Length: 501
Image (cartoon, rainbow, N blue to C red; front, side, top):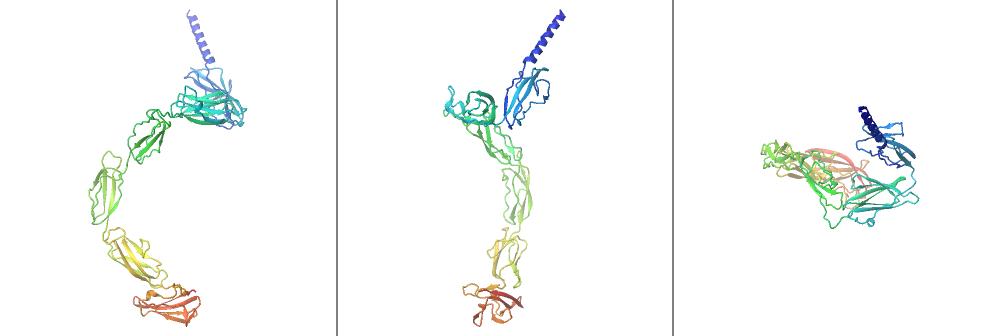
């Protein structure tokens, strides 16, 4: 009796295992079409039981098992077979389920006039809860299509259409978008896509998405991630990109066009008080050390008051609970009333590089120098100065002197004109060295290139007009010798100039 019972149990188990291995098969879609050279994806199959494990092979029996779902090659036109089984409790299904992959050459097929057409939505659906896709068949191509569509970017829904060139998706909400991708099932070399959006119902209020406010952050902290789905489940995008350096207001734009936008301001607290070093004039009123920094940080100073006579450092300590750390600044005290007077020296007469050198009476200041109406410069030396009378301004660039600048004129640079043009046009008609006009005993003698004496003139006179005994002399170089005083010393200088007609 006991032996018969055990035999009966064994037979039942064998039948169950035989049934599992024979009839429990994964579900597949076959054939699968690819265009030559297109990008393929891993093959898929749906097991009969969620706990089953899929196994992939290259042959109906025996052959090689793939380590994972295979990705077909689309390099060559042709048909390839793949096989899949499922395993439950150590028992593998049999026989293997076949998937046929066909790689086709491009035959010029096309999805024509793929479009959205609300006028074809069928009752009881309306333009406020459905979309309708329509297209046109290519002549001579089988009227069979494979497609998938996604509602607001969600998981795609796959399907096929036989003898039909349209698709209606219902059960939607105003503003939802559906993107359809469709191709000829047996000629997959043209894939077309279009997005249709459900119309907004003017009789319904526009929902506004809500979010949990993001707490303030410290500057430089990792920027928070703003949720792309609202508390109500509305999806969308934020702009601009999150900035972890400054307080910014961000705008959430729902994917659904029938919804209102939403904003959120994320406060970024400063990581530094933001004080800067400064300067004051000695003896001026001492500035007040502000207890609220330029970036809004509050705190206290050590020392608490500024010494207006001596350069010193001051430390700011933020109150607790703030992002910023302590900061030390330097307040530099500049000397006051340093610009008292200045003197100058000029290069010797007739030097090639005529210079004016300025020397401030009190060298403790920080000055800028200006020649005539030219730009200010930090150097106290002006080079290649033209002959004649000049003015110089010295300015205390710290602003700590009273007055702030001093100007002196009548600085004489002595040189000679390199040419003149005696053509009676009122310009350069006479040659002279007028800078020496204040020396009554100075005189100039003029010679031609062969040493012939032509004319003697005085610096305080009109000068030479380029004639000899009443006759115009030709364009040429002429020589001169000048006798003059410099620093109460009698000097002589020789050179030449050009007469141009």
